[in-house]
Length: 332
Ligand SMILES: [Zn+2]
Image (spheres, rainbow, N blue to C red):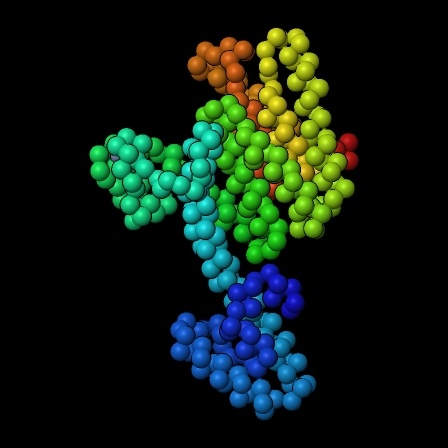
């Protein structure tokens, strides 16, 4: 039962505070505050009548009922996470556009890039406003980039998926921070071919602290340290070799620091996985670019988007994929 209470903290809200101590009546069918109050009063009355042994039976029953409302709670938290993610996505848009330019993230308020008019608060609702305004500024009718609602929608989905995988736990919070940092780097590197140090270097610190504090499942400070060093070193050597041979910079220092950050959150397994998957994604994209656009092998492609995409894949499926590969390889 302890486990249920921890995974679904809504049970820790006032309802269960009462029910845990005093009893539980058909909470599954409860939809209104009034009914809830009736239940709470009933619980208090019942508690005073119940003897200790009966209370234990009652608590076991409570655990069963908590499991019965589990699907509702799952839906509640998933929907809440989606909305939370959309709001963060809205902030990410600000980060993506202002951070590379060195502007403040907090002020001034968002303006229309075309006419400079402040965007009204009711026109600043994540995802929704874009469609209400049909993608145009209310003042000048200038086009609003489809990137804004896309980033908000992706953030919302990402946050909801993280919630469904991790529940409301410290790991959920850590992976939100990690994945949103990855999202910001994805777009900034795509637009400007830079990966801001303020994200990657601070990210390394956050990863090390989170792992040391035991907030990342399967990680500790040693694994985090090794991951950071490996992530920093593993791209360093090929970067130098590539530069010597081709005479152009193939991998930026930003990529090296980014992989170190990824390593601080995910350890050795994460670094190897991300390196492999991002190289795969990068190669496919480079070939596609040559085929479609006639780009040549020297056309610079930012590597950050591939590293960050692979890192997010690792958060969701990495350990499972690695286990699967091990299981398969053992058969041969
Ligand atoms: Zn405008």
